Length: 322
Image (cartoon, rainbow, N blue to C red; front, side, top):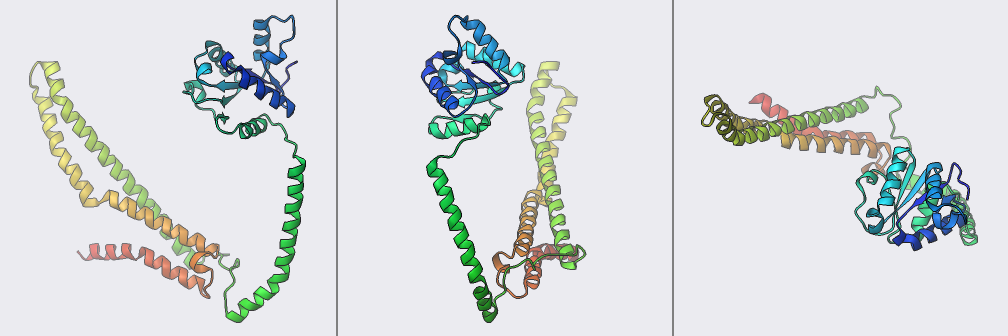
């Protein structure tokens, strides 16, 4: 067949011919433009020349992956050419194998367990519009009718539900839980707390990782210095031994800093409080969780926010007094 801008070239091993032929037939039957040597080389054409011309003209390459194709030099050459020419490479995982390094950055289509699903994914990848079957069309129509009936029923039930809610004194979850003004004190307080805990968590994370890295470097240098000293000076080098002693002294100092400032515990604690505050914010705005059925949602939000930040206030107060 003549190639065009949408044609996909099949690259595969001869041991996978049966699968490649079936896949190509199904893709063509669904309207996809693919080129397979077994189907598209005309009588009288030179095989190698036809393959080379098709690979050069096709903008896409379907690579059938299997143990046989991974070991095939022809497939490797075709993939290398496609990548060099910046063609769209679509790996098709037919059988379990070690995916070549050059194809690992690409998402593959998995045919190992479900052929029909793999075929549908390949058709979507090739931008082939799949026609719905009669059964699917009937199911869609039935779902549309059911959705219309449910909508009508909901409209009829809503006045009764509102009346019952008013009688019971229930608060309806609506868009009332929103801050129309960013200058709202409660909003500013919550945003300030979220921002503060986020910054403190990031700072403690950086300090913890930096001190741990210094510990590792110091320990590695202590282990390496004696060997370097004997290798370079055929004996003990006083400057190097002095450096080793300094590193040995540095190790407990770094460990003491970690324990004294509790960077790791503070990092985890601040991050947990920050995410809890964010959770309260979005639950309040969405009228979800504890805010779904209370009369004074703002008061409950203020109470829950203060309960989350109270431990930090207590810690600050005790440190100030000591």
